[in-house]
Image (tube, rainbow over the protein chains, first blue to last red):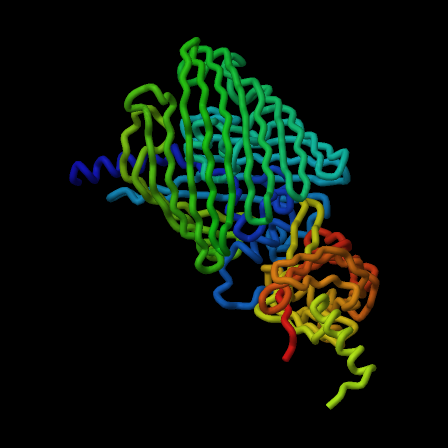
Length: 387
Length: 186
C-alpha cells in the first residue's frame, strides 16, 4: 500500500472513535416548517425518544416514498411497526447506528449506537431514559469501563409540567446550548462540550415554550459517570430561541462550567461559551443552520479567548434525500499563531426506507477543534435504523 | 338633447360617490393568497394551509370571497387529505366563503391612499355560516385595490370535528388571512 493510502487508512481508523453518532435530531426540519422540537420529541428541547407524532412524521415527511401514495402511518409508525400495542403513556424505541470503514484490505464495522429508550408521559409527569451499548467511543456516557464494548446510559431524567409549555426536569440530560444536532463533530458542539452523544450532565433544568419561543436553563451538577468527583464540571447552560416565522429561528446560548481538574489538562479549568445561532429555510426544501460561539477558557489561571463557528446548508431535492455542505472554523485561542483549524465538506443522507437512513460524509479539514490540528481528507459511511 | 333632473341628480351623485368607493363590480387580479392558521398541542405545532385560488363575487352590495378547500395545502399531502375529507368534507361543502357589505368597506380614491378598518361579515365553512369580524386594509393602486383581511373563527362552531392525530390535538380556534389585488370587472 502506498504511503498516502496508509495515511488515509490510519485517519479513517482514527475516525472510528470520533464519530460515535448518538440519537437522531434533525434541525433541518425547519425546511418543513418545524422550528420547535416538542411535537416530535419527548424532550421539548429536542433529540431522544420520539413522540407518536414524531414517529408519524418519520413516515410522512422524512422517508422517500418512491412516488407511491403516502398511506396513513398511524399503525406502521408505532414501536415494532405496531406489532405490540403499548399503553398510551409509554414510548419505547430502539436505535441502532453503525459505521463501515472501508480500509484497503480490511472492512471494519463499528456499532456506534445500540440504545433502547423508554419514556412515560402521564398527565403532568414525564420520564425518559436510555441504555445501550457501543463498541467504541462515548466514554462520558459509559456505565462500564472496557477497552471495547461498553454499556452506555446517555440520559435519564424525570420532569413535571406545572403549566402549558413549562417543564421542570431533573436527571442526566442534554445541555441546552446552540443547535441541537446529531452531527456532534461540528466544532460548535465538540468545542463547547454540548454534543448529544455523551456530553449529557446531571442537573436540574427548566424549559419553557410557546408558539414562537423556546428556552431552557440548566444548572449543571456534574457527570456522575465520570470519576472521581474532581473531574466533574459544574455550572450552568442556557439557550433561548425565537421563531420569527415558521421557517426562520434565531437564538442565543450561554454556558459556564468549572471543574477542579480537567480530564484533558489535569489542571483546574473554567470554561465559558456564549453564542448565537439561526435555523432558516429561505425557500422550500432548503435550510441553513449557522452558529457562532465565543469561547472563554481559563486553564489554571491562563486565559484564552477563542471562537467556534459552523454553517450547514441542506437541500432535499427528493423527499428523504438530503444533500448537504458544511464549513466550519475554530480557534481555541485567537491570539495563538497557528491555533485555528477549519473543515469543509459535505455529503448525502438518504432516508431510504421506513425508519432507516444511510449517510455518506466526506471533505477536507481538521476533525475537532484541536489547536494546530492537521487538515486531511476524511470520509465515512453510516447506517441507522430504529424500531 | 336635454337631461331630465332626476337623471342629472343621479349622474352627479354617482360622480361624487364613484371615486370614493369601488362602485363597479370587482374581480381578482393575479394570484391571491389565502391562509388558514391553526395550532396543535402538545408541542405548539404551527399549521398553515395556503391557497392561491379565490373567486370574488360582487353584486354591488355584497362582496363574497370564495376559496375552494381542495386548493388549500398545508405542506403535507396526508394532512391535506385528512383536512379535506375527514373534517371540512369538501365533497359536500367545497368552498369556504367570506361575505361582507361592500359599502361598509372604505376604499381609497387616490393612488397610494390606504384605508384600514374592521367590518362585520359572515364566514361559511363546512356549510355552517357564522358572523366574523374582519380587520382589513385597502390600498388604491393604478389599476384597482390591493386588499388584506384577517379574522378569527372557531371550527367547532362550524360543526367541524376537532382534529386530533398521533397525539396532537388542533386548537379549534383558527385564523384566516387573505391578500389579493382587486380590479374593476369589465
